[in-house]
Length: 175
Image 1: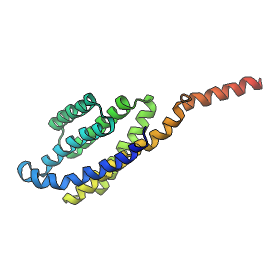
Image 2 (image 1 turned 135 degrees about the horizontal axis):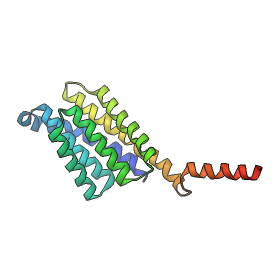
Image 3 (image 1 turned 60 degrees about the horizontal axis):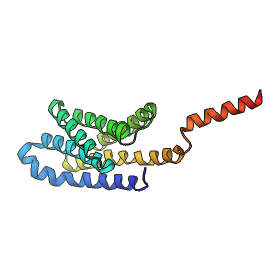
Image 4 (image 1 turned 180 degrees about the vertical axis):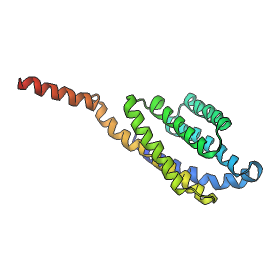
């Protein structure tokens, strides 16, 4: 991952949180608070995928999946969980593929941790929702910290395979 990925994630978190209050002030009276939040979450998910991936097809897939989830979700909480899964799948499955076990562990930690942090910050006021949005995307920016570490070792191949190869070489030399 590029070094600026983490910074880009932090900036996105701030912009996403900062956009909520103006959006709810304009759209809230027309759509209602819950619907406005749900729509905002769908737009944010697609925008996040666009910001980290810069691939039109992947962004379109995120927007389409978000629209489907918007139609079937029973509220913002269920929608947020579904959108988290979409972001996780596109991020570690399409934009930056990695071995399945690592992708699952990383994405469960990031999306699950982000949703838990957002839930801890969430409340009934628009400001509390702003903090929850910021908190979720703040945790998501950690992807780039982990990925930078992974990228540094990727020139030599899989670190686990490298360790296995060295262990077998030691065993062959000892016998």
